[in-house]
Length: 531
Image (cartoon, rainbow, N blue to C red; front, side):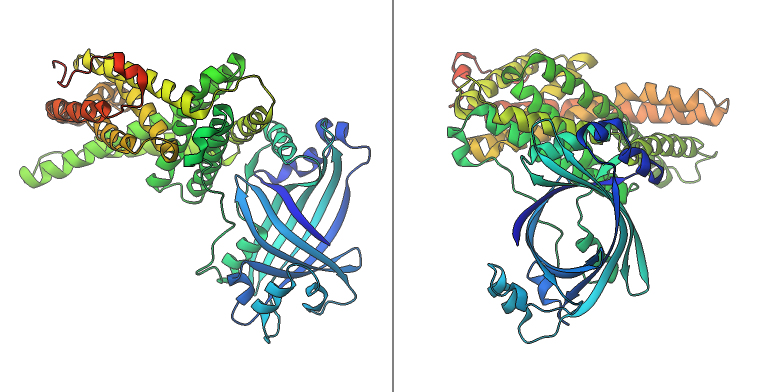
């Protein structure tokens, strides 16, 4: 009667692949029977004041194969499309909503308190065809694969349902991620963080004050210092994979919001930084594989970000000239050229993400890390020891780069920018298990990134201008190119003047990291390098 439901939800990005998924040889090898189909009609009930929803409970009646089943679900988490919640099922004789059959279960008292003396009323419903294949994975886990094709109904509103669910019937939850990764490598699938229930509450206009399924918090705690480093770091990377999946879903819902795209890139870069940080503990082949995958996507996102920064600089310049030089002659043709180029590269990335091309990376790395974290290996190094030595190594390298930096050398500026950024991400991701003094260092590194980014913008200007100006023979276009080049040069020069102060603050914060033992051997210079 009572189970803990665990299922991975994946949205089909292309309706045409429904049949081909069910018939793929991958699934045929794990199933001894052909797929079957059910038509499921479900009605969700609540009190007039939505007491069940506010109590993180749901009550539904479902008709399947001529039989009625009442179900109560409680609480639940949703991480990267993996949904887990308590589920209570009771066969009933009629479609009348009653809580009496559940009163003898462990959810009974809570359900009774939420409902009180109020009647249960229908609030929304779903109707869909469920295509099912029962599978046994190589590790012996039993999984029900179901593709639901239908709709959510809330009054006169409708929303399509087309999703694949992998529900664990017996075995290990990581088998769901493993199978999801294999399917996503073959078909266009997207992790679905929102349950049908939550999507229905949105459709019905009942979601105010309610939250979607609760994500799990970061696994890094103070006590993590006493755990194996491999376990802590693998679970932390999985946490940020979940965050990246959340950011991707936000971006796909609001592709014109620059914040959603920036958040997606930040999460990918944190995963990359953690992967590099963990590298000594990982098999080289696996490390290089996932490093290559993450680099390819970060390169695409960096191009979008850098172009957006360049476009913003042009907007700043045009606003400045309009205010300081009234009646500026000539049309600023670079504005439309930049807008067109920006739209093209952003649309191209959106198309790839919407087709689920990032999903095999998310699920594949998640599956590998989950399995690797649980393997019985001989490495007994604790997180406290590993993180101390690894951070000391990174910080020492970073300080060496800064002390020998020539700001007129673009390659050296880029190297220290990347080193500082990955160090900042690690300090942020592992903050709960690190000394409090690292918080100041992370903040100082973030400020330093702003200076370095401004210095580097001039190096990108010729690249972007070549792309947008080369096809234009207009003299006005070349005039605008000269204007933006001069503007970026001026901003870069101003940023260089702020380098000394920013670097001094970083070195002072670094000198407070007394617990990073290898730094004792580093003669920390409390001065800025020559410009």
